[in-house]
Length: 345
Image 1 (tube, one colour):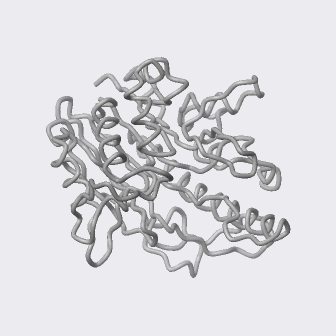
Image 2: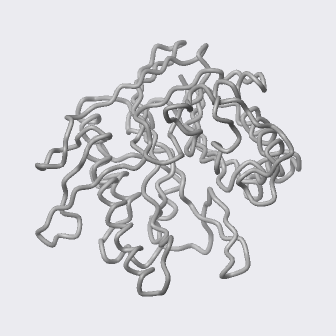
């Protein structure tokens, strides 16, 4: 079984208000990319990674008129993809949803949120992800109330061939970028505030992970955490990166999630790194690479199902680099690249 996570930049702009695909010559929201070219590139990438399920981060919007599920299923139908079924969870407060596109002949998926409903009035462990989480992140004695603008997607997944049940949590954590800052001081304030919110979200997520592990559930946490160990200087203010929080303590292997790409970052810098996203920096006038996307497995999946991970990076993966059509499709489709894990089931 192959499971993937893929952040698709402004996927929502490829669909009209009736969830119909706009595969035309108008500009997409991606710089210098036409809608038809982005749509075709995405279809090429989906076919190449050939995943049984793809957790799509920044999936098409859901609102009173639009449906992420319907848009994704229309996309799959247009291109004849075997991943023909989609599922979403709690609606995002942004134009970007978290949705799973999957092959219904291989998998069964059910939205199955856990946790108590919380309005943030009291401290509750791991409340439901569409509620509020009260937590003192910066240890100032004043608990703050935190929310997910994009509530994680919690799924009960069943592999139809083997009958294996897996808990799947798709996540898009808060960005730390100081958007809207007018000067360096404001950028610092916004960055610290955003990291505080991101850490709270990941502590919330980690509590849910621990509850599932204690219950003996097999689980996968995957998506865009917008963070990596040592990724910026603000991490020193809080002690740990969000990724380390979600992974858990390596000294307690029975509750520690595994992602080998994250583990590379946890070692001392070696002069090289894995990356899953590529952005153009107008400040530095060059492309910058970052590790933002993860697929984390529970210990039992690692022990019993011989997992192998792969990042479909257009320059770092040899097959993607040698296949110029695939390389171009990856660069055209999004500023992130798919991350996959194969499990022997």
